[in-house]
Amino acid sequence: MLASLDVERRPGVFTYVAVPVPTPGLLAAAHGMVTEGELTTLVVPVDAAERAGLPVVIELAWLSLTVQSSLEAVGLTAAFSALLAEHDISCNVLAGYHHDHILVPVDRAADAIDALRPS
Image 1 (tube, rainbow, N blue to C red):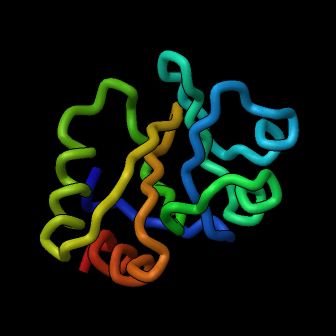
Image 2 (cartoon, one colour; image 1 turned 120 degrees about the vertical axis):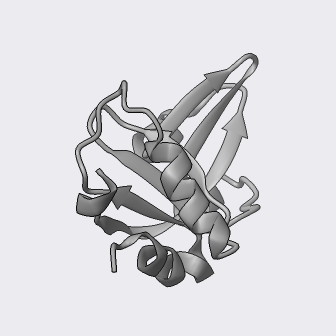
């Protein structure tokens, strides 16, 4: 899978917010959501967090791996996170049904794309 891996950047700048009950506006803006106990974590565009009066603690670029991966694939997450770690790039991973998505610091997006693309 790594030999055919490519990456695309989703337009926009994103952040994580955690709220007890998401408002309809935040839900509509969310590109990702995880329910954790008493809080719901949402990945939203920075402007949506600001409109909701929520703190922007980190600004992230959303990268999508274009290789279609299986939900049962072994080692893909470890492989791409190791590539990013070699370049001192932090990442947060969201797995979709067919593709993995990586949130990286916005100022390191170009570096992350270069690190992930096969040479």
